[in-house]
Length: 225
Image (cartoon, rainbow, N blue to C red; front, side, top):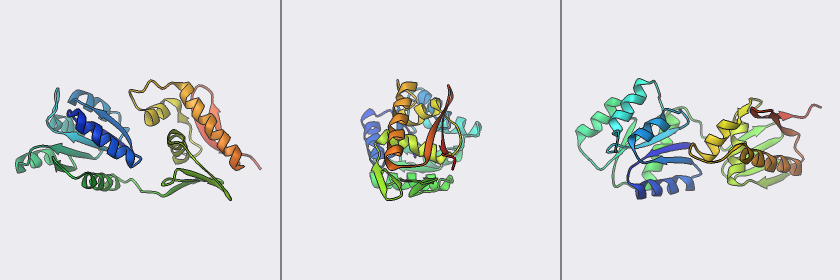
């Protein structure tokens, strides 16, 4: 799951980022409303955690502009306020849920999971393609009797490829989804992790290949019998 945090309290944003990454979520965090709106418009995120009181553009304005643009990403509003009218206003603009600071991290995570399910995400335990199975909880790739544990970025790259079997995945999409929008990662970073994965396929004796579509991206294929 990919989460966008829009929160101007830097320490809180960092704490939330750490909590969510411990849950194996991919997280981007920005600290003003203008940047938050730009990131949210990308459509890359499964859930947006949005503070209301932000510099440059407040949370209500962001929700209103996203919903006007037909962007339906679930939004969880955060605020120090506990006024009923504030909650009503946020929900009327199109937010999906509301939490008042301070809050318990476990409740925040539970609400994020609920919002992702409500938006149609199916929580899977594994992904399979041909003779490969990716265990999403253990970061383990299995082929027959053999298995190997993947590093974080190997896992993220392969998860995207296995979620889109036989579809060309653009290098640019891999960079944004695995390294982040503001990352300095380039094509050679992606190529390195594709190489790592190919070596693990070979070790496992898999019939699956990661084929390169020159200057475009990658897709999973199986060897012809």
